[in-house]
Length: 518
Image (cartoon, rainbow, N blue to C red; front, side):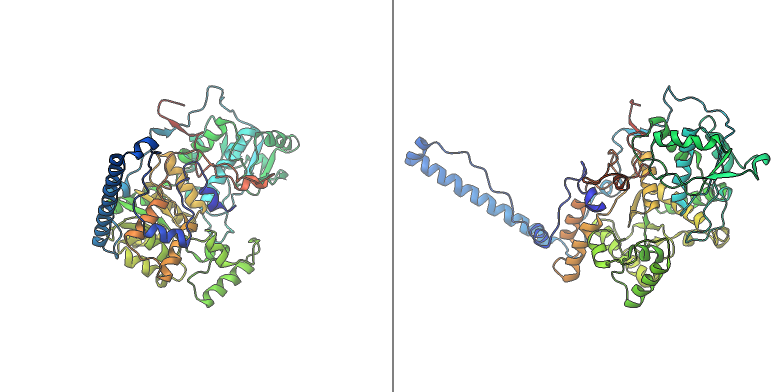
């Protein structure tokens, strides 16, 4: 079962339809009201001529009523403009509802202040910005479990983005250290006496629980310093003590604050967007590396598809090389194209005047592919357009710092829409849940592909019918409170852990509580 199928089988996803061409055609042309249910008649009553006459009159009246209702429906549909999505209320477009749930990260009464330790843990964080952020908070949790002093992590400078930023360039290092006092002892660097000391090197097993780290403690018996070369996904999503889970939340949402330079410009970008009213933050994953990694080439030229294939083959740490692009798309594993995103947002009812912030790197194909989305929504802006040249030049050649700006604007948006389930999309969704379940619309990519194919064939037109199908499909995909999903049915062994919903994507129930309950 695919990831998209799993999301369609959750407790609050039962409404999602398995859309096929025949069922879509039936939905697009409803047959009218369902048949009336008649109680079983009593035989003695039907023997009377008067009773039989009365029944015939009632049946005739029912037929007239159904006919009149059908005419009303037909007249109403005829008045709808097939070229425009149906109108929806402002609340439907922008409102969110946390149903009384709120953040809860206070330690339990069993949680004790952790003192200084002469065992040290050095870390190299790997991946892009949000992979590093969640990995750092995993390491905070690990340091607590093994009672080690955490040295400020080194950031990844060898990833696709080749960013030379240090920890203090992206994060407020003094705040990070002081905010976690009592949780974990954190230092900027190793003491001078240990700078040249021998270090053990350990790759922690992914998605490990507390019992695993009890065994790992033994490493520090022979060495004062243990180096961890990878930080991402080192803690389990589920089954950890609640105080460790809440520590991870305090780390990510309170302690790991961005540097003043990033925070200040991020707030300015939000204010400039707010001056125009409400806005959508669109995380459009249509960068070259994403398309090459996923093998998604729908809508691209043969030359572009070949360029992406070559990039995938030459990237040694990408294990999957031979990918069927068509299968990927129909399984819902491809990011929506800019054109598909435009059609989706129009069908959801967002008007042409909507302001949309483009939270993304360099879009593959540039204006060639982004122009269609811009034709749908002319108020499509990016950080480069909102910031002055002087403001933005400080961030040149620092992809992680630029990504941090996108993160701030996305978290603060009225609506967040990710075109693919990337690390940033998961991190932003989790943060927005933590802040009161701010509206996050997660496109059902697998279901949408079937609709878009019908549009392309001419079997369905943009307008009220498409809008009804799309809005119904996403009725329960808008960030409402729910518990985190477990592993996929049928998955076994450690492989099942990979199929779980990430803790940072949905920190419910450990870090989100109902009002008055902790």
